[in-house]
Image (cartoon, one colour):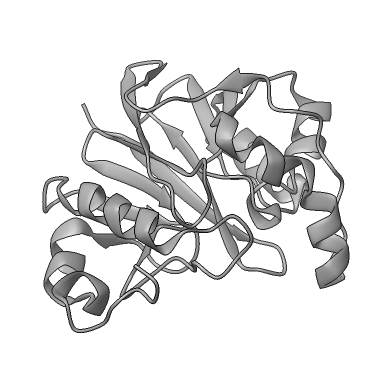
Length: 215
């Protein structure tokens, strides 16, 4: 069974929000709704699917800014790894520092853990705890796709100079991510989609041409 992944790039940080569903499925998960809730709501309604949950790869402000607007439209749970609760709680202060409008969402109400399996209609997605960019960062993978948040990008990797980031943790997380099958399609938090095989062959941080400072 395949997974359908629809992307919307939203907000001042050009963050990728994803709608994940079985092709033609009745339910979808909204992953990392960073901003512009009206656009996300319209995309969900066009899809014909019913939103079942919000899944968060991590809690930086550019990944959570639309939650309040979405939850006013749908009473759906928010899934977050507990180690990112502190980042989630301080998001409005981060937004004020950047000077971007932001509505602090109510606390997440479902906990994610390494190895959890999330079921969505006909899909079963595995949770991989992948700290480094953020302490509670996770990856959702299965059915030939991996939604990797800000761990891995096409040709680059996530920042480790932010509060609560850890370069050694990110290096270990990348080792786990790159062990996924080469044909896995990678959907990052910013920028274009790629594959595990392409990144393993050409990404300088994975080939050894560049190093993570502090790792």
